[in-house]
Length: 338
Image (cartoon, rainbow, N blue to C red):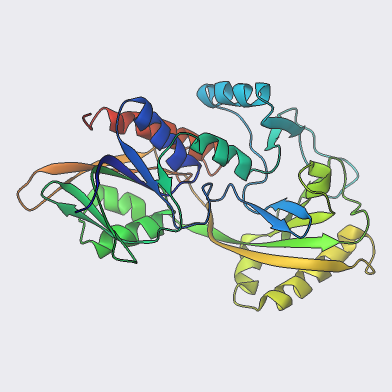
């Protein structure tokens, strides 16, 4: 028989971790399930040889007062540091707007691991379906394992979340379904490249180039998280789509051609490289509100809550995912009994 929790959270990225934290702090029993090898989602950091590189989120900004309070606490604990106040686009005039951009010591994934402390979670769990039962919700993974709960939090990119409930025959209210169906995402190809010698990137070791094939380039050694010259190169949405189906070696070759003018020479050597594909990298528009909380009826008419959170709400930013999970988790706690 499946172990029953008050709430099951699908996805242990930033929004899932914060939703789980809010629910657990409110006295609810919570379990997170994630298909990845670690918590964090797009707060991802990868090792290449002796180096380390952030492959998803590269930094974050602060606008929300609640998020600001958390960030100040992380800075005091030595987890987070201010990396820059703007990025060069490769021109002679570096962009400085006075707004701090924060990064995480030891890589962005370290913050996710910090937030997971004390939470009940399982990784390497790939779910197949989410369905309503007479007692609430039932989740089934690809190994046939079954999980039961009073409520479910869906934090994955919206198309992936909808596939899970569609597989379980869940029918959402029409307005909620239309809202979720409207969400579109840009893909992002990320190349992690170890190079010989200094990279020549402008201070503080990163470049953001809007409307260019290589949208973001950062030296993780100068960022302070790598022992080697390890570049993170993020391709724009259109360039990512153009290269998506190529073999990794061909992707690296084409990206190197665009990288040559930035490096200032065609003689630099890429000694090792990896390619990461984020199919749902960034929502192209924001949904209204901070989250979507719906009551889903069964055949007898009784309802059970289903919460959608993530960076499709509150802006396509680290901060947006955090705030969506935090406020959505609080709202769900009021609907789910101890």
